[in-house]
Length: 367
Image (tube, rainbow, N blue to C red; front, side, top):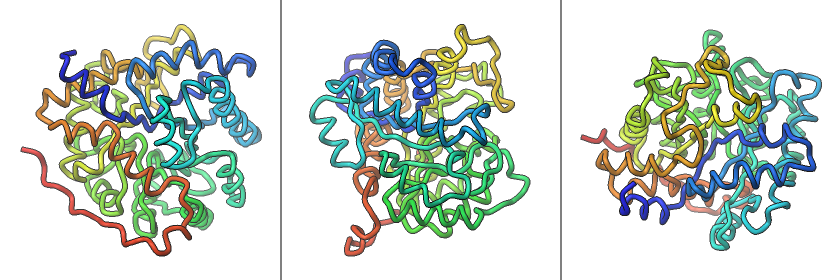
């Protein structure tokens, strides 16, 4: 990597809004959580230049439905334990001010999140409980149907949010938890954009115009998220970037970043890698060649981007594509940081006298 690109990457705030490493860490005995994170994952985050790491809690099918809440709490506890066991290098953060303080101290800021809410079901009154435990970002569906909404794998139903889903969105907005539309069904995304009063985030979604997969977002959805002040963080998973996942290259990834920037605007794009292969290797060593998940080739990865240590390659590729230093800094993390500072952990009553949020027009596609 050329010196100029390396310097740009190091000097930028790099925010990864989706890494399922909690699945890998929490699969170990609790006594080893802090040390396993320190030995296995921390070096990768440091080498990749990660400054802000969102930690989603994803509950696997064997825990649902009966054990979903217990596993949710276990994984949240895991996040607290690994932070408490590595106080000199990472810090759990609940708002933008705490993130800034962590970065100033040279630490990686960790932000707990929920991917779907299988432990909640219709009990929306538990969302404040999870908020008290530090959760600051959440989605309400995955591939299938929940009590709150349908996931993108159920797009054929044309379903909007359920009444409990509408209630969950309102409760999250009241508390200052960012609503994540990744994995939500297409009609559900439209419903959220119709009724949301605060910005939303897509923590790991790519462009459907380039890869027609239900997990990706349409141009209309991209514009809607940007119009509300939100950010779309592009997924690195090869199967969501190109139909032939085994042929995916970093140029496919940059194509998606460029498309989102062109449609939604350069101020509304970020990075949501979803390093599934790396996590799978920790859960099923050695990871089986051709591992599939929900019908996708989950083992396929862009060469060099199997895990977070490869993130500097993204900066190099963006430079080569012609993005300016300022644009690259926005993509790497400045856009996410702007959103986190404005919204994360900030209750709705704090916004009562704030100036109206600016909603810039999406930029024209880059030439």
